[in-house]
Length: 98
Image (cartoon, rainbow, N blue to C red; front, top):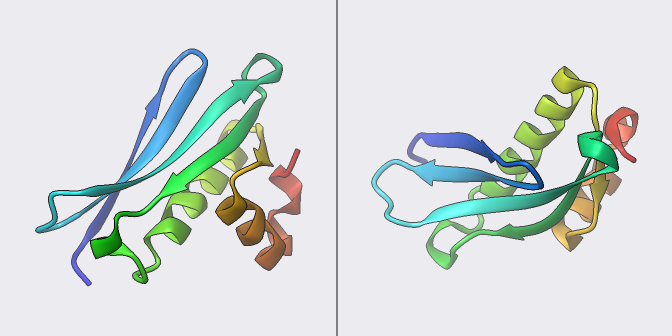
């Protein structure tokens, strides 16, 4: 697979992670809203375009979310079905789950 670049766009009340794949026009994304004064990121939507599916890109987005939460000392509340399932598969993420 080509290189995947993950970027984070963080706003006052909402934010998103975007995954760009070399040579592809479309991007995958994971969106969140901030709760509890920004101490909790509510992961509410993950989308991967059809041409990028099956390449582990959604997992890379959640990995970036978890990594940033740990680094910033904040929690994640999984709401999106993909993120909920990812947290079930990764009990080692319990430290950042709200």
